[in-house]
Length: 242
Image (cartoon, rainbow, N blue to C red; front, side, top):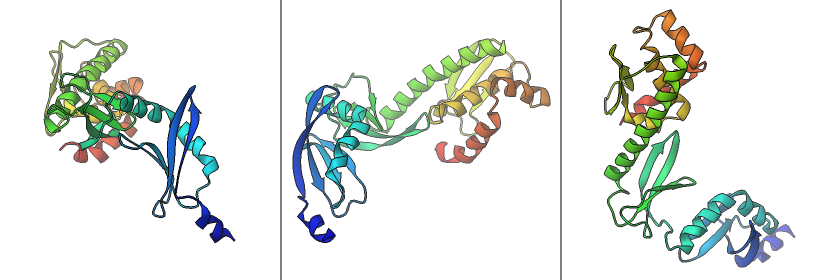
């Protein structure tokens, strides 16, 4: 009985639903090879819900609703002719792994966009490839590290004279007695809390130019979870320092 019902289920259907006040069309496609439900949006087929063969249709609306931010963003790109369709690799950003894709609707001077787990560049430029991705990461690092340094310097009660981003292979940060801070731009690949720990660590050296008990006590005041962040750093830095 169960097997006959499963066989009778249509392999492909189309339907509509109301999502955030707007009617959207979608198709349902059953795949014997799928072990879980997933969504796909393509320029040629639109929104498709891919289901295991015996997955109940009654749960489809819930799947789309749960991912409505992603669906709406993708459909908006599709409506503007900007759906990303060429994969150029992956990058790490603030502890996330983003798929780097290029989109025909982004003109070469357009700013990259992050949508769900994708970093979208213009297709007709070199920015979607390694050199362009690195330029974008360096720019983001400069902004984020500076904001973290300025905010935490006020809390700690120190002043720095200059902040530079470098490509050091063995150090994530350093500071000089004269107030110069140096950080590796690849910090932007780390989770924000770990990134901020490195910034706080160097700022605390402006009061304690050593790794004494007094230094670590100061770090703990301004970054209570520093041990966990340092442990994460030691466990992951080899993989990220490429």
